[in-house]
Length: 338
Image: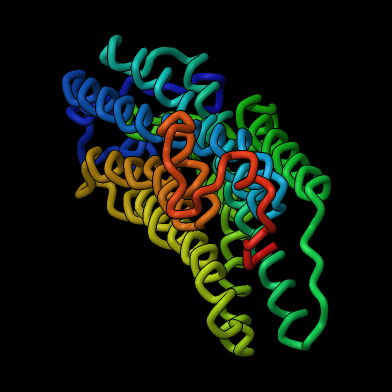
C-alpha cells in the first residue's frame, strides 16, 4: 500500500492468526463469490441508475417544475447518485467477467467517483438542511422567507462538486508523503483506506470528517434544533417539510451510517469473525440510496406528476383537471415550499 499498488493478492483462505487487520480488510473471497457479488451489484446499479435518470429527465423536461429552487436541489443531489450508479455498472460488469477486480487503473477510477459522489451527496444534503432550517427559523419569528434563486442553487452545487472533486483527486493521486491512499476492501470495492497507524489517524481525523462526518453532524444538529425550538409549522407546510427531512434522515442514518459503521468500525475491530459478505451487504444498502432518493422525491406532488408524465410519454390523462398541457403549465404555483 505504500506504493501505487491498490489491489491486494491476499485471499481469505490465506489468512491466519498472524494476519493483521489490514490484511483482513483487503483479503478477497474466492473467484466464484466475487463474480456473484459483482454481477448482483451491477444489476442493482442498473435499476438505481435508470431511476435516477428518469427523475432527472422528468424534472428537466417540465418548465414549471424545474423553475422551483427546491426542485433544483433535488437535481443537484440526484446527479451524483446517477454518476455513481452508472459507473458502478461499468466497474462491476467488467470485474464480474474477470472474476476479480478488473485492474489497478479501474480501482483508482472507482475510488475517485465513489469519493466524489458520496461527498457531493453528503454536502448537498447538508446544504438543503441549512436552507430548510433557515426557512423555518425565519417563518417561526414571523419573518418573510424568500426561496433561493436557481442561480444560487447552481453555484452552491458547483462549489460542492468542485470540493468533492478535489478530495477525490487527493485520494486517487497517492501523493508522496501524504498517508492517504486508495485500496480494495474485501476485493470488490475500492475506496480510501488506512494501512498503518499514520494513515489510520489521517483517515479518521481528516478524511472522514471532510467527506461525511461534518455534513452528517450538521444535518443532525439542524433536525434537533428545529424540533427543540418547535419551529415545525402546522398543517400545510408540514407534509412537504416532513418529506424533505425524512429523506435526509433516511439517507444519512438508515443507509449511509450503517455502511460507514460496518466498513470502517465493526469489520476492522473484529476482523477474524467478519465475512466478506457483511461488507458486501453494507455496500448494497448504500448503493440503494439513489433508488430511495427517487422514491421519496416522488412523494412531492409536482415531482410525482412529472414522473408519471415522463413514464407515460405525455399520454397520461390529468387527474380530473380537464386541462390541456399548455393550460396545466399556466396554473399558478401551488408548491408550499416555494
